[in-house]
Image (cartoon, rainbow, N blue to C red; front, side, top):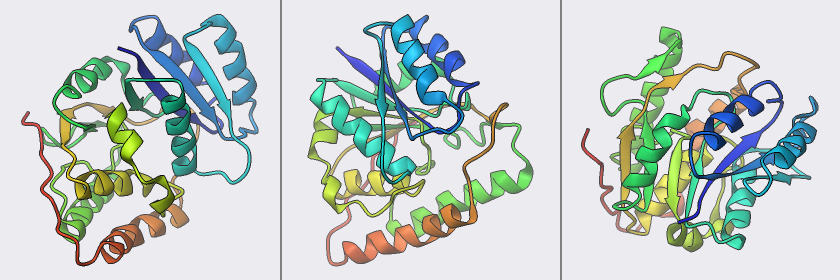
Length: 245
C-alpha cells in the first residue's frame, strides 16, 4: 500500500528538513512537498531534500494564486495521478507529530476520512495561550451547530484520506482557498455519505516561524459554514461516524 504525506509549505525553510527526516527515517511512507512560491527559499531546499531522499520525497512547485486549500487540491490531483492508496495531510511547522501517522493510516481501514483530533480526549494542545484554545474550541462548536457535523475537531489539518474518497470529491464545487478548506472537505465527505472518523493526537504550537492565521482567514472561516449550508439547502444531512477514544 502506497501512503503519501502531503505537506504544504510557505516560508518553512527551518522546519521542513526536520519534519521530512522524522517521517522518512522512521516510517515507510512517501512525502509530497507542495511549495507555494516561498520567498525564503523553501522550494529550493525541498528540491535538495528530494535528491537526498530520492524516490521518497517529491516536490510540487505551485504558481498562481496562493492559498492552503489551493495547495491541497493540487496535491490531491498529484496523489491521484501517482496512484497513492492513502493520502495524509499535515503541517510543516512540527505541530503535527509524525508518530501519530500510523494511527491515522490504521483507522483508514474503517473510515473514508480520518481526522487527527485535538479534542477527542479533552483538550490535547501544548503551548497555546488560553485565548487561542478558546477560539479553536468555539470554532469547532460553531461549525457543528451550523452544519450538523458531529466531529470534535472539524478544523484539524492532520488527516488521512482513502484514495477512492478523494477521487469522488467534486473539486469544482469547492469554495474555500484558505483554512476553511478543512471544514468544507469534511462537510462534502459527510454530505456524500462518507464515513468520517477521529483518532486522538497531541498538537504542539510551532516553535519556529510565523503563524499564517490572519483576520481574513478568520472571516472566511466564520462565513464558510453558512455558505455550505446554503449551497446544500434542501439536501438530507447524513450522520458522521466518530471513532471512540
